[in-house]
Length: 581
Ligand code: XUL
Image (cartoon, rainbow, N blue to C red; front, top):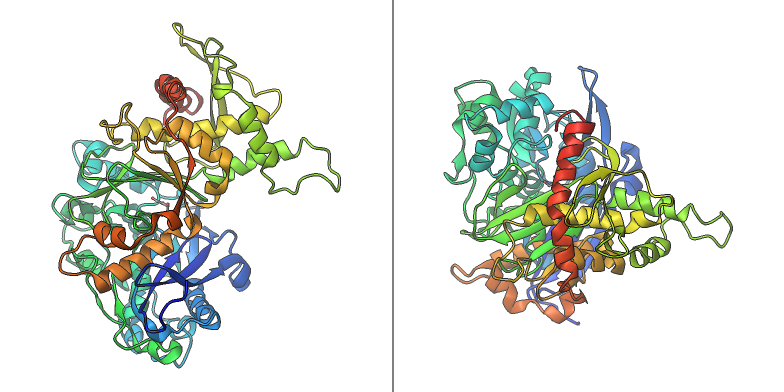
């Protein structure tokens, strides 16, 4: 749709594992320009694989990290690409963004003055080369902090349950508190010479501001350091992380957290006016985590859910109820006081599905006519021709399985594949079973497995008013959301009283959420809530498509009958196969 030339633009950025994405939207929330930088393909000199590097630790272990300077180079490249696509950056009135949650960036003592002196004469990567006390940022896939997580889980008499009640989550390898603690122990000198610690989101905001930006209210709840109910850093957790009951130095490094995430932090740094022609009055709003930003890509109502099917699988809901548990995460809502974000995060998303797809594609003899490796046709046919739970009728034994090519977050299990047979009612005993004679039934089983895990854990949160309890609407985002077989099994297992919907720009949901937040911050009147402001401008027919009926009477209940056995299987695998998880 043609837009009047003078209509303001708002910029949203998404700094994710493998790419940096930039999106410009108009005040009416129409996408005007997009640009993407792929770390592996566009910035090959850093040698990243899928956006990360593996570092060998002094202890001999491994850590998963990303070079900070790579992101700086990516930012310059993304902005030049926006310009080359014809974007007039002088029309940008506000900027916001999102970064992978939990990751931390460490500023050197001279970092803030280097930031303040940026004038556009040299590219960011060069000008900021001495601004950091650590070259890399730990990635969310890292699992090098087992000892530190155990220390966090021991801080309160009530252990991990109490840590979850205080901070919204029990200790997790990727969470910032355990990561900061591990690095402080590994390199105490560099830690001492750190003036500020940013999250990836506030790091990116800092570049735009030309000064260290505060950590965002939603993103701070991915650290295991923030007391959600008190709305402040937790003294005992800071003492553990900083290694001293005197927490003033760590408090100073982390800074304070503003409560209005729609309020401008300040205007843009002269670097961007000089180099890209941004207006000096362009406002910089708080940047948040990638998952909180994703829920801002639509006016999500309490009770609706987003299932994001990317590298990781995440299940997100906005809810007024704070009901924490070590089994999942509660976070502050990125814009709306009184709401929380409920989240489940799995490492084994796309990779696990692709492994089954490849096994199925390998069944066809190689020939020039054979499907290319990334073809989902055979996988999808296998999904639709396999009966639910691989049982021809409910009186046959059902198969439940777990497929974890990577160690998993929920449940916390090592890599492996397990299949169990569940005897039909009334017996219902669970016994290990061998692999299927062919990989074809695995196609449906892996989707059922991923979604049953979500259903089991989201049960306390889905609206009970919907009978039976299920999300009101299930929105799909991420790469696999375009696959109709995936949408159909998601609807069958998870329901959706009003159906399953695909976000038309699902692959851009996170960057769009950031751009919408910038627009809301710039144009809201008084205390206008984000949901109401976006709801008034968002055109549902253009933004989402109903792709599946969702709740199907009979089938939804059939999956419901095996949820308990699914949990028992997870626990048995933890106990018997791995000696406790
Ligand atoms: C969430 C998580 C990932 C990252 C990267 O807890 O670790 O989803 O945010 O996307």
